[in-house]
Image 1 (cartoon, rainbow, N blue to C red):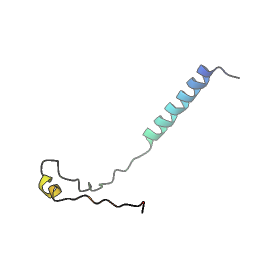
Image 2 (cartoon, rainbow, N blue to C red; image 1 turned 180 degrees about the horizontal axis):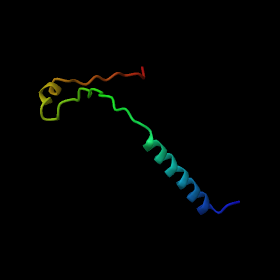
Image 3 (cartoon, one colour; image 1 turned 90 degrees about the horizontal axis):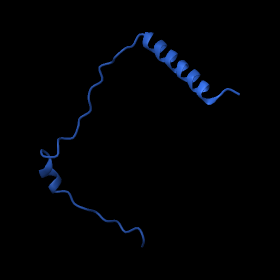
Image 4 (spheres, one colour; image 1 turned 180 degrees about the vertical axis):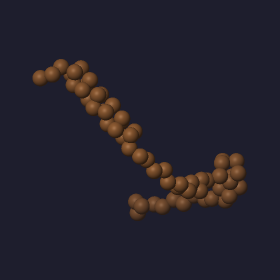
Length: 60
């Protein structure tokens, strides 16, 4: 059985080789539209003021 530090070194080398191989492969970047983000806290505060609270009693 190999000592743990040697196993770690082998694993690290294999990971580095995988990263290098992945870096050599061509990559395609697709223009993905950004999702509509909610407005910052200060801008939509008036709309949030009209929200209510609903309590549903499931016990009986």
